[in-house]
Length: 410
Image (cartoon, rainbow, N blue to C red; front, side, top):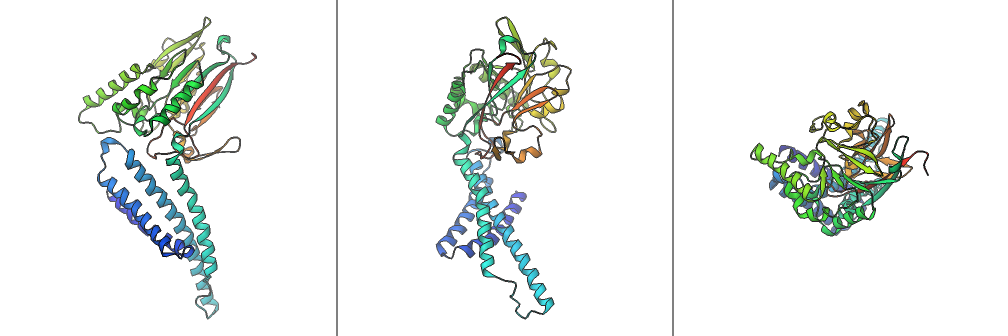
């Protein structure tokens, strides 16, 4: 609570300072009052949600909406305040210089036209993150993108040439609020008509009950070679408040049972073989393994029991830091790893062939898309759902479609 109070005070200070820029540009009392009401409304809305917040329910629904609206207004005030402060510093320095050189007009460093110009620039720049956050919440979170890749391998069995995989990840069903949009996304997955579908973890935010309203729609996922899944860090219930450890363990068992009911083949440090025309490839699935404080239930050695070094291998592992720290250094050559977890932070800028940026790159080296190291590939899926920030901007929800190719075959 003390942190929130400090944040609220900072927000008010920035809002008051930013108001100076707004007042410079808009002389209408109505516009000025609208500024005050909206900024205070955002703070009051968040304050109510903070006071009534239930840690066991997670940061979702109206709490997440309140947080996003507050963040949008906070960024607006921060940018406005920064430019006004910069202009004030220049003005003070100019005033000091005039006093030193003996200019009699103590106001010689103040130019109203410059103040208005700076305010206009500040408001224009501040509107960019403000508008992006609100647009991402309104439209971006269900703006599903199908991203297609072709990967070539020397040792892919001939029978699996042109074998097509669809991957989704990070559903976070507890955050969904539009059944028709989610249904559209699931239909889009099926429309790819892939040979197999892989889900790489985080089907809920905290509790198995979050999946209940969405169980039927996700049970429609269909591929001739099946639907396979693994667990992500959120699936274990580590971020919820439980009365007992037994209740937490029961929640996990319920989640596993629900995935089975949905037709998902859940891999828990285990493997399967996909067969075609007498040939096979190994599918290996580990439980969550994440760098730092994230859960490390993943056991690669156990998961690959029964798989030989010569087999062509696809690994499902939720967190890409597992690939970086463990998988690519393993004596088994894992040809393709499929991960998620990062969400691309749900915010960034991507222009294919030109720009690919998100703040999450400072936390994860491999954060979105295809990467290759030591002749091994990883695809980091940007996620199907969302959590925390109830939206996406620039980093849209993703359905990955990967076609395996045998080098030398047409």
